[in-house]
Image (tube, rainbow, N blue to C red; front, side, top):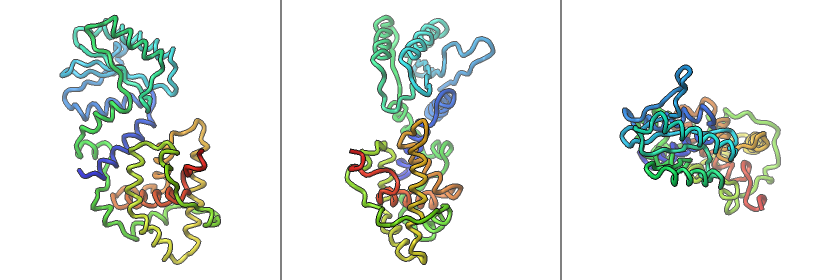
Length: 304
C-alpha cells in the first residue's frame, strides 16, 4: 500500500466518522474494531428486555469494555447521565471481565466539556483498580491505521495508487467533466487564484488537505484540457456548476463540516463514474483544480 492509498482511505475514514451518529456510529465503531481485531473484538447488541447490559463492545485480549455515545449534539448533562448509568451498569454485569472502561464519543476535535472531563476524573479516583479512558477521532484513527489493504478495500472499496495518478490522461478527465450538469456561464475573470492558508481558513482536516494536494499535482493537465477543449466557455460553465453546488452545501441546515462538504462535492462530481481508480483520481484532480481557483471553498482573505 503506497502513500496515495493511505491518504485516500484516511480521507474516507474521516468522512465516515463525521457522517455517522447514534446507532450508525456504533456500527461504524463495531466495523472498525472487528476489522482491526478479527476473532477477538466482540460486538454486543441489545437482546430482548435485557438490552446490552451496558456493553457496546468487548476486547477480551486486552480486557477492555467499550461504551459508545454519539448523539447529534453532545449535551454535558446528558453525557454525564449516560456515563454514570453505563459505567455502573458495566460494573454490575461485567466487572470480573474488564480492567479498562472506555467511553467512545463522536467529537471530531477530541475535546470534551469540562463537566465531562471532571466526571471521568472522578470515576478514576473512585475506581482505582479500573483504567478509565475516552476515545474520539484521534484514538479511532490510530486503530484505523493498523488495517492492511485487504481490510481497507473490503470496507471502502478500491482506491487509486501513485501509478494510477501518474497515468491520468485527458480521456479520464473528459469522462468526468461530461458527467457534470452545467448551468449558465459566469465571467471566468471572477475565478481567483488560491491564496495562502486556504486549507486552514476553511477548517479542512489534514486528511482532506493531503488528499487535495495529490490532485494539485495534475493541475497543469486540467488547465491544458480546458485550454485545448473545443468549447472555450466550458471551464466557466463547469465553474458555475461547482460554485452553485458548493453554495448549496455551505448553506445546508444544520451546517456541514467542511470535510463533509468536500466529500459531497466529490460524490456529486463523479457520480457512478468513481467506481474505477482512474475515474476517482480524475474527480479528485478536477476538484483540486477548482479548489485552487477558489471556485469551491473560500480563500483565506475572504474568511478574515
